[in-house]
Amino acid sequence: MNVEPVISVRDLRVWYGTERGPVRAVDGVSFDVRPGETLGLVGESGCGKSTLGRGVLGLLPTGAATDGSVRFNDRELVGMRQQELRSLRGAELGLIFQEPMTRLNPLMRISEHFAETLRAHEPGVSGKEIDVRSIDTLRRMGIPPTRYRHYPHEFSGGMRQRIMISLALVLRPAFVVADEPTTALDVLVEAQILSILHDLKKNFDTALLLITHNLGIVAEACERVAVMYAGRIVEEGDARQVFSEPAHPYTRELLRSTISLSTTALHYIPGAPPDLVEPPSGCRFHPRCPDAMRVCPLIEPVEVRTPTGERVECWLHGPAELIPPGGTAPLQRQELASADEA
Ligand code: SF4
Image (cartoon, rainbow, N blue to C red; front, side):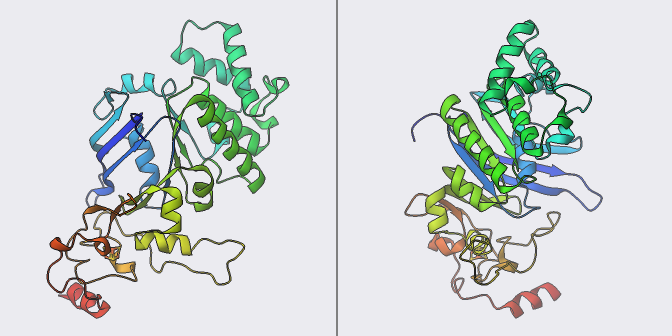
């Protein structure tokens, strides 16, 4: 695709200070998202997905340090003053949260939420314009105008999530991070929200980063997918290609662990994502990887392109010239155990 990206992330790092040392929650991540495109970000809990989403929007808690570059329509967001970032958020950068009820004020009518959002970014906007734009956005999300002056508790969970999406979109942001937007919802509402997100891309050319642990959602809603493990993107590319021929063993194991109608035996990845204060040496997935080779705990894999164009960080794909002699022999787990004891 030759269209310029809306958002370009390069070597982004996010650390949190703890008593045990820095937690490297995002550790050198790069990706682009173009207008009208959805990039799905997947991985187990604790792999850094939400931190990455918030880091891109500059929405991290105090005490977090960020490094690298996030270019948004030719502006650099890393290091930008909070005040400037705040004015971009909402107006040009949007965030859809997981739990709508915790974000909607139960004492405020839906109309008041819209008025607050619009006035914060467009101080001169008239009451009439607020109503017209808000009702139009709600209608696109399937919420009838008759519900405009209702309170949050008068809506179902799925409707509240659609209201949250409308609030994130009423200012027509160019880039939106949706963090597990359907996790708390049943499958029918989930399908509705996915179709709304699909229309949104088509109608407004919005670029979307969709964070989810649900691979089915990515297969349905995303053109591209990035697989995150222990703070790194280990595979990224065309969603159909990645799902049909995963290049990284972690992607393959994640897909095998997904339950579908054809599932006959449950599969799971043994172990858990590592402690990010002290991640494993070399490839961070090596303690859990069924394909681990002798090179894997020794040297961090470098990014390579597969013949079909996906980016992958795994020694199975080379480059051969960087692998030391004997490095491709299978890793014996006893070798690891004795190295740990030494
Ligand atoms: Fe497995 Fe080695 Fe590839 Fe890491 S680099 S995913 S340990 S084969």
